[in-house]
Length: 451
Image 1 (spheres, rainbow, N blue to C red):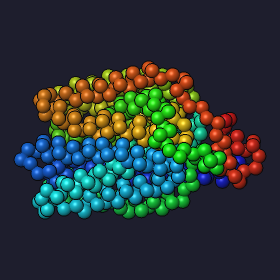
Image 2 (cartoon, helix red, strand yellow):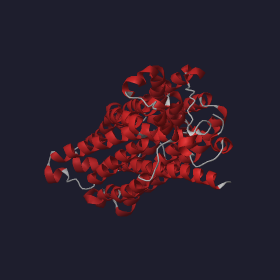
Image 3 (cartoon, rainbow, N blue to C red):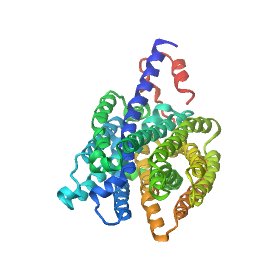
Image 4 (cartoon, rainbow, N blue to C red):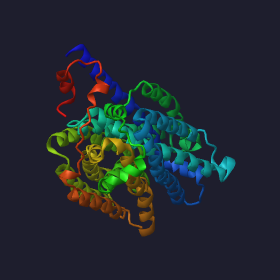
């Protein structure tokens, strides 16, 4: 490999590391709250009924997701107009800073009603920043990857998200296991949030050294960036609608496996902390393991049929998971949990790539921010709350399967409607901004493949 090509490869690798490191922090921050919802509910939403406290805590969790579309509407156009890099830096500051502040908040016993109000405000800031992150980082990674490698490359965003949630789960559940519930309730829950501060500083240092994506730089150089992304993106209404529906299943199964399953096992099925921690780790790790494989497969053989088959299987197995929970022992519950986790990993492996291919570069961040954040709010962030509410209202611990069935049917329908001409085919020469140091078209083609 020539020195120039090695330099270009290192530049791409640095971009991936810088982008995904911040993504890890974002999902660690989100994961910690989900895993510590029980203690947060009792500290900030005081009630004689523990279920009411938990519901209030999950409601605050869900509220931050309903703020995400607003963050997407702000940061998506920002990324399409002035660049992905600056946007990634801004959202990281908001996310890591707000998570750190949760660890410093006084509880209800200290300041009364002001405590849950402050918690909700900070959660809204987290949701605002997360709404800007997803469209920007998906665009950034897919544009660095280029055609033919988007599935594999963007699958690592999902792997990073899972690892961030696993890290949050290991820290939160690990501390609960070793310190005990009483110590966690008395203030130990703060530590995982405070860890976000130094983690954010490290990630910020890495992101500051990034260069913008080659496709965006090519548009910028040609003077073809959108001056009004929020207006221009509606030329792609069909793509936005398709992404919305396809992400419905992605959202619900994501938060089922990586957030709600832990609470469900501990609070509903009464599994001990050790079992909950182990099962959560196994499910998350298995999902992460198959994601790059799914991404590589769809890069080679196409995304529609793969996602359609996996989505149908995932919908069926989510219903199986909840139906099998009645009277389940830890030994019996592991099989449906692991099947759901693996199917989640396969489905989520290629949804980010599909989103990036249904929208053009000039409005990609804005389009993804709109089409992704709304179903995540409706079907993802609300999943723990809706599941807990259904169980409370019906008295049936299998009742949540109705909710997850709806999300699966929506995504299957969208995939059936997806046509070949829905995919965007652009001719953007993104090689020069990334490889200005390379000499000759042959070298460029080796790196990026035929355009």
